[in-house]
Amino acid sequence: MVQKLRVVVRVDLDGASVRIKVLGKVDRHTLIGLYSLIRRTNSLRPNLHLEVDLRDAHAEAAALAELHHSCKSGHLPEQVDPRLARCRLRVLDPASAAPAVRSLAGMSA
Image 1 (cartoon, helix red, strand yellow):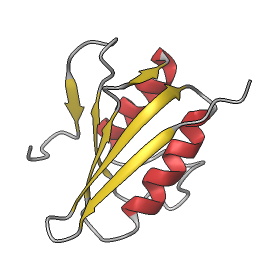
Image 2 (spheres, helix red, strand yellow; image 1 turned 180 degrees about the horizontal axis):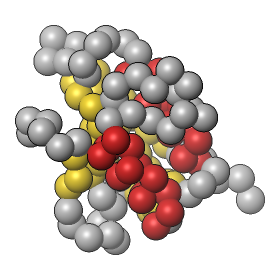
Image 3 (cartoon, rainbow, N blue to C red; image 1 turned 180 degrees about the vertical axis):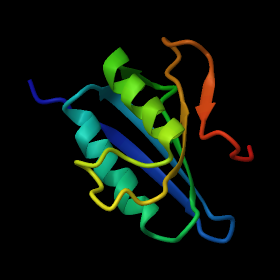
Image 4 (cartoon, rainbow, N blue to C red; image 1 turned 90 degrees about the vertical axis):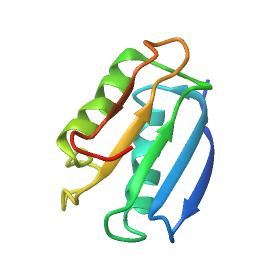
């Protein structure tokens, strides 16, 4: 069965922020598409604050761990973004996961 994500992207270019609301199941297959969307959104403007809201999604532990690694490293995986452009990413965990919000160190809330 093919899994699909539903996303709503809200862009505030004046405030230099983007919120990507995700519904559906985030796993190793759908994560590739989500990363592609994050990469394209990140290229809209330098220094965008990107927030991926997974609170209403279901995420497999491995996919969630990869997203959190991208938060900490400040860039997306090389296979998604070979240029390794700076990515100011913040992830809101699914309700089924720990209720923590993880973000890039030093990023203002």
